[in-house]
Length: 137
Image (cartoon, rainbow, N blue to C red):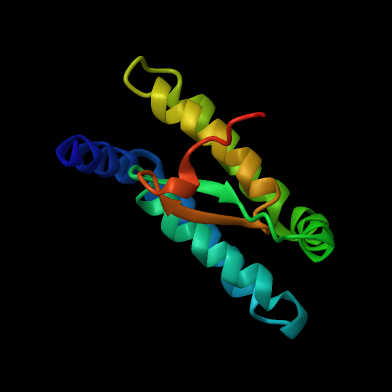
């Protein structure tokens, strides 16, 4: 399983990960210009690391994130989230033009949703108990 993850991560890095991570890193650097937007920069760098090498990890919501995350996500959407999401969608559609690229394109479309509102989410290993879906009772 680790060999498959490695191969998928290498393919992802070559076809999409490097450029998308560069976009997140650029957004993170821009967010560090003002003190009030530093939390956005931290979230952007966290997502840059995830987008660079995603297989074997997943994004889960933080259950203790509240109103500050909601307000921050609205500001993030206006400042950088929309543009990064557009980058994900364009990359995803381009990758879907080939049969081999369809899974990577679909992953980009899913990441576009994360790019719109990254605050209140964290990256965890896929085999972590926190990554498992919650059973409805």
